[in-house]
Image (cartoon, rainbow, N blue to C red):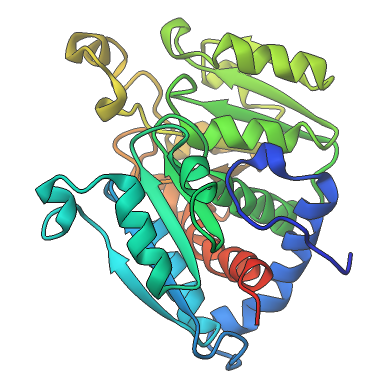
Length: 307
């Protein structure tokens, strides 16, 4: 394993070098027995993680809390604005300043792109971006990479179909920059109005990442190693009529995967884009993917919260 990790904050996957990614993925492997309650860890005894979630979350919030407690630490904070001083008009800066007086690191989810970086520049403890509007979701990216590597064996030479809301989906915005560090081919499958933003495609070209733009699902998944589904995010659409046009555009059923061994991933929550009959297939990985958030986030917290 590479013996050092130099990032002080986890804000964007673009802050990572490939060696940083590999370090976290290797360390996550060591964390799995602890995440499964097979071993007990005291590495962060006495440490507190402050969670600030301005948007709803299940997997990200609970996996961060689980990760900190598996490391021996504890958690304070809030998972909704109701019942906090935010309701009284307290600004993000002030709330973060207060949390930083109590905790050893902050995990922030916010609806404004750039919120986590702003806070990281104004507090004296590490900050982790747990999703900033349509911006970035770096820890989701790392658990996604960990899932691919664990199930397939490597990250190089993969063919990956990324499906659904590629315009507003912060998970895929982060993911593609990480995948570009490896020798992969990506198929972006989305309606024209929800395709990957042009500026990201420009960046991928500069990074020599191979990709294609597609609009149909079933015609483009026979030769891939990974099918990464995403939901159409109603809450990101400024116009409900535009959402109605694309809702239910792509649906994956077990019958569609009869002779297909590609692993099926999804950052969750799903709506109707993956049928429940897919859950029984051996290549359905989205629930295991959710578990993988614990060892990966354990590795991150262990790396940035100093003893």
